[in-house]
Image (tube, rainbow, N blue to C red; front, side, top):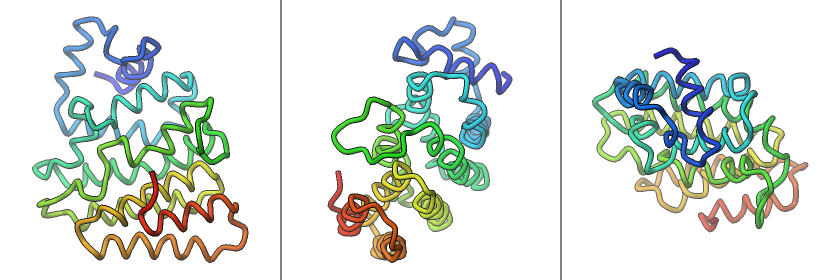
Length: 223
């Protein structure tokens, strides 16, 4: 299956609300038959190139497709990052590809606003809740021999997203860091999240509402 045909299937059939609802049987068999490592490479590729490759899809299609790939209940897609029997470099490749997903996609397609009560753009909601609704969370690598390396990559993504000059991306990163502080199994992870937020708070030009949100995230008291 080519990368282009995979993108068309994941994102092109999603206006119905479920990306795989309208797949012809032959196409569904191809997608479900993809080996785990190939799935990781496809996910990394779409994260890496989302700014370019998702430009032709509507916001709803982009949201539905990304939710399908990343949500906790997804069918063995992003969840594969937590499979310790798969190559570490393939799993790290997916996590690191979140850097361009934020920089080239979220920062361009999302409104440059905080998500408070609601937003008319579903992309903003996806960005805001990305570390809540996806399978990527700090405690997801328990008993993984490569846990520290994978966690390092996740914190790097959060730190980079927080440095983007875009309020929605900054709030998303703070949201993820807040969860790392509140729910981490290791004190070192909580402390690391707090240090990243402390550096952020030293800036003088932060939006007042983001500063307040950052202070809440530092204690883990975010929703």
